[in-house]
Amino acid sequence: MRRIGLLLISLLFFSCVNNNTPVVETVVVTDDYGRNTAVPKRPQRVVSLSPSVTEIMYAIGADSLLVGRTDFCTFPPQCQTIPSIGGISNLNVEQVAAQKPDLIISGSMVNKKNSEQFDELGIPIVFVIEKPVFTAIYDNISTIGQLVGHEQQADSLNRLLKSHVDSLPHTHSEQHTCYYVVGYGPGGNFTAGGNTYINDILNMAGCRNIADGVEGWSYSLEALMQADPEYIIIRRQDSAGFVNTRPYSSLTAVKEGKVIGMESSTIDLQVPRNIDAIKTLRKRISQTAIR
Image 1 (tube, rainbow, N blue to C red):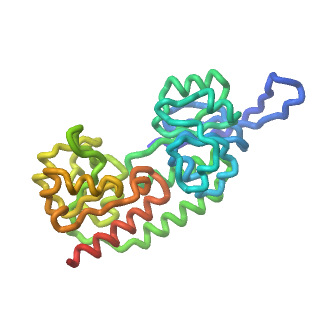
Image 2 (image 1 turned 135 degrees about the vertical axis):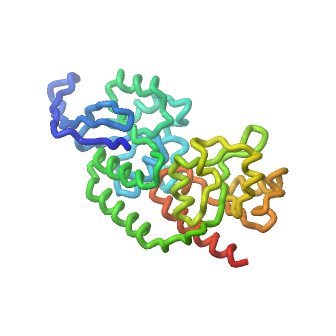
Image 3 (image 1 turned 90 degrees about the vertical axis):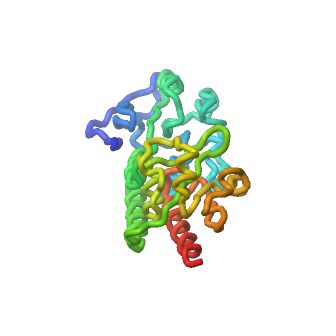
């Protein structure tokens, strides 16, 4: 996995706006796309273009630096008091620039054209993207902590999360089979394959993902119906529609009431709350397994 590394060389530069502009100390970082970018050593105005980044910044106590977020950044709830710059796929570059950030931290949804526009405007943008394994959450937390000058808080959070993981009881050798619903219906069936961090979450929760042999997100309806997993795990808001739609309604998990609705952002985002998702799934499975 690629991790942003702070180079040992610090750069000093002056703005050409006027002679009274203070010196800004910068460091060069290499982000998850291999881009080398000079960023302020201690940024003061950060725009987050990722719900994961926003949540992590709050978790390490760096929320006071945030001056902008996206419409999709909704956790923790208090982040919604921060001005929104709109969506991600239809990113409004001018709206981002209007917040006068000295650093932008983005996930994987911002495209190359937008990043080049920020480069042209002289606004440093660094990409901290989702990784295919659960343990990468520690790297992302450390990286964001380094970028915003909250290294100690990031280290403390990582120690706390690791202690929660270490305290999880060992799963039984024979795990319950499960399927995580990302999408369903005429448009296709989508789930988390074996090369995703969500697959790791399911395993840590005591489940064997029936799609662990698939790479990516697409899965066939035939394979789902044939595997007939013991548990269906789905976004809470999609649960009612799924159980009342044929042929999914004929799955054993649906008939036996073993469909677990989850708060989507605890699984769909690579964030500290992934631990909460693991614990919730373990509890729900243990409660229904004894029926």
